[in-house]
Image 1 (spheres, rainbow over the protein chains, first blue to last red):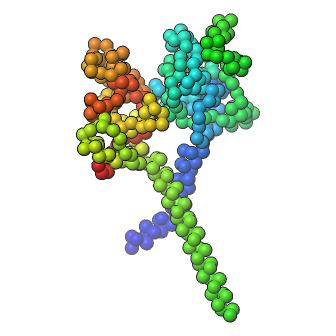
Image 2 (image 1 turned 180 degrees about the vertical axis):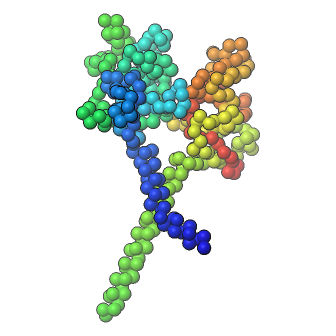
Length: 190
Length: 166
């Protein structure tokens, strides 16, 4: 008797189960809509008013990812293992960077280890928690890359084309490291 | 003649239907397996001698079952975890959690690794929030937090449940 009941239950629920599994697979491997919290990425991304419907939402891509400078990424916070944070990549493994808050992190130039990145908040005014505070970030802490701003509609944009408001101008990229760090320190003091 | 053709068509339709059913079953099983091994449980083969005698006793590689569901905040002291290697981005490590965030680690500064020698003060280290301290059971052969420092909780993939066979 119970066998027919189980079969019937399966017949009715297999679409839910299948749909659920496919949704989770999509969420894990393609991407999902992520809500922006905090002001650390202003003015590129603002949290806006705290009413849930008005918070900005972005598309977080979970496609296979290699970190590049300028990407906005969401990652597991080194300060709270279960919380997510969103910042922009300022340097990847192998590169050398002068941290934007030299006084805070104490170092004048940091070489990024392979497999790590350096993330910084776009908004330098906040006590933004980024690599200036917790150092280099392991690549595998990165959950995904932020591609599009989806909500509010009035602000829809491809975030991949944006740059940090404090980005070093492109002409310095052809210089070797020692010249580049000199230029960066100059622009910070000017 | 006509009945033979109708019969033949029925056979072909039947075979096509079976092929379709088999394809669906294969696709469903593949997606289901992928879902389970990426989200629920997965197996792992333990390499090296850093966790003897718990794993890889007698140099035979243990295959273990890893729980991927339990959230990282529920990791307890003495759990064995599978995590991304903090030094080799594409590799994994299997170690035991010996201290949690906020706890002290008592270390022997002379026997300890590079991190211990650099940061221990009066034989003690505090594990910062968001991290845990991991060590292999085979202290002499294990490259662990004593060398590379506390492990960020975000690098942990899951807890090792038990050995499937070794």
